[in-house]
Length: 273
Picture 1 (cartoon, rainbow, N blue to C red):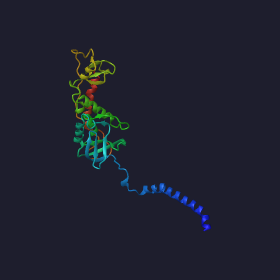
Picture 2 (cartoon, helix red, strand yellow):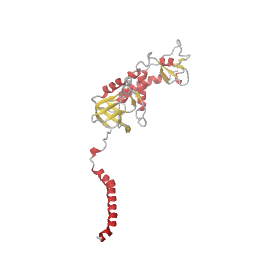
Picture 3 (tube, one colour):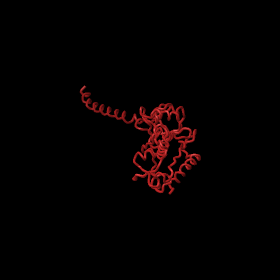
Picture 4 (cartoon, one colour):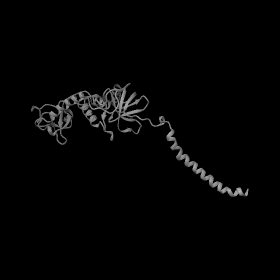
């Protein structure tokens, strides 16, 4: 018994070292081993660019996939539920994608702080983000670093505004007449004005008058000069062919011809003297 009492301190120290070793094993070795044996189905779901089934539309810029994953359209901002035009925006998105298989395209960010996928959405060759803005149901909004289509979306908002489209812009220009103004002057100019080259900002005539702008001496009543005419083409931008997978493709030939037809007359107007 005396011999065992002498060994007791040694056994206690060994017991302590074994306990520490076991805890270290539990904290480091087991988690490392688990990485090799945890089924891949338990890992976070991945959503590469491709086609997905739409389950339901939540609001004007959000919808759910068939597996329950929520998607937020990048680069746009539709009215929130309860705000003016919210119902119309939700209906517009639903009319485009409800029951559809859509193509999702990632920019830089994968998800937002709410866990929603951030994506550009295509259906039947149309970029849905662009359509909603161009039809006047959502605003173009930049969310860096996701700026792949920001210039197209900004142009779509300008088009919707100038043409009074959708709930957001209807009756935006009662007269339907648009003129040019400068950033520093107090005069507006009609198409054909010799000073037009200095005026690249287009504005509704009604709004120009409300802001105190008056016609320049050349564009004053009775002195000639035509008003700006804004083409009201459809809202359509093509990128991914329906039923195909892979990287985006350029605008198709028809879209390029249409775009050229809109840009060239506008270029002519801005360069008349």
